[in-house]
Length: 256
Image 1 (cartoon, rainbow, N blue to C red):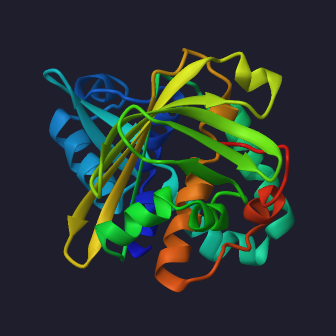
Image 2 (cartoon, rainbow, N blue to C red):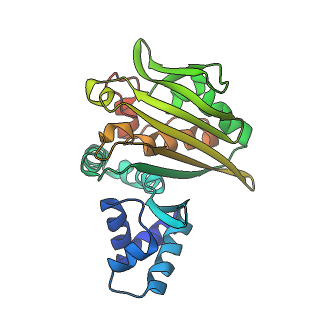
């Protein structure tokens, strides 16, 4: 967490995050045009943000795109903010989700001290998944081309197809939200889970893409909480008890 605090302490780096908050998935050249400094200066600040995990990059053709990764900031919130200001912290988090600019692709990254096999199990096992995903389990035979269905008790949450199944490294799924008319109308998007061993830990990258420009933010707004809960479960065996996680746990008004 020290790296996250260091990254957020500098006003220029906060400005870079603000620019990615407004428009995610920008190139270095695009970000350089938005700040009164040299290309080298922008690169230097981006390296600090990447080291802290609050910015992640992905290649698209010849371009290197930069994405805001809210998961480490969420972890800071869970560790520090919620303890001292629980009532308004959850409200501010919900407000951020409503105001967040929508793009075609959302990228989330987190490091978890576990094995690829254990992480894969947590993603695909219904009982484990329900413990960090607001009580929502999942059923599938996990073969390529098979169907999956997620539900919270009798309430259907999502369904889709397992497009790629490569345990314990990669899972690609189509995603159809079912928990409300607003999200049902958005149609099909895609979620990719990528697991990479790093020492005694794993880097988990979740990419939610093929989203309509201006898509309902309920489709992706809950990922930081889900991934924070996954990390907490695998590293401590416990479930999150922050205001946001308690609010949605077992609720029928579920947010992905």
